[in-house]
Length: 253
Image (tube, rainbow, N blue to C red; front, side, top):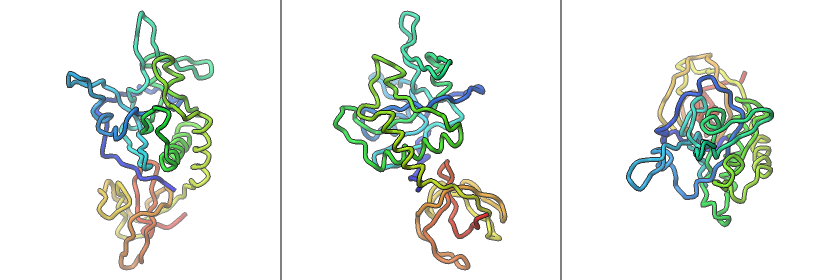
């Protein structure tokens, strides 16, 4: 089942990948709660400026996925610092090694909302959302895409994700993937179908599909609607970007 996805907090800081490939997913912990606006702004500093940090995706404790930087763009999440000519951030994947800003250029990053004190739990809803998203990333960017903890990339400076190993994360990916079945549809309604930014009638319409136009995604419950000629249903079909179409307007192909 697809978790709730929110696009209302786009990050201020991101850049072009310049054609670079994505080789890993880096896991972070927020060291705080309700970090949406902090990450959107770029991280506050005492003088009122910001740290120019950003992240592709934030997983809230209630399972909501906050999409903050598009996958195709570079987020400033794991570049580390340069001291005495040496970068603190180093990522090695196979025979390739990346340092500093190159780490950001070749990775996706996510934050788990957590105090990182070893006592704050990671709720099931949060970990299932994380697993679902990593599964979707692998479907898009490569099945072998590894998860790497920030502590592994920036040794000595970072400790996240405290209390959550890569092996444990992989178990949640497997659990989420077991329930993830993407299907293909086409619009059966002569009037077309609205693609919404959520699973409610009030969710913003971001696109309109014409009759017989293709759509692909996962069936998931949302707001129940009743429409003349199409009956009553609470099922929606949402894609990996969280865009949804009310299920009765579609037919499976």
